[in-house]
Image (cartoon, rainbow, N blue to C red):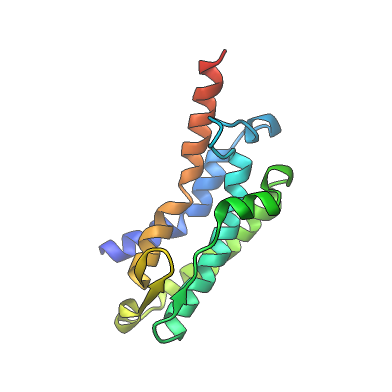
Length: 158
């Protein structure tokens, strides 16, 4: 398996990784915070959903526009204004799954020239299809780290 194919597979498995990390989580556990500046698992789910929907558009822009400017966004402001901490996670999980599924289909069909397409990210500079895939192949796997930190924090304070 090529490195690229490995990244696509890791990307494709992101939704399953989130579901596995959340397996058996109670509502209380979804709201555990490892520290004052740490997100809860519930907040991470909503962040992942919004990030995936944003990333899906980024991928399409990279593939369909010449040298697009890819804008960043304020993740903390999204979390606050979109009330991540108050919402059930079911719709966020469905959004994550749908965005990943459609983008994975696109990735599987890319031709070699498509992998060379790029633009500029407003915060990090040069931004290619390959860069996009490297970032988002790992992105969904952060939920397991958030839950582990929260559990450790809870046990440390007991």
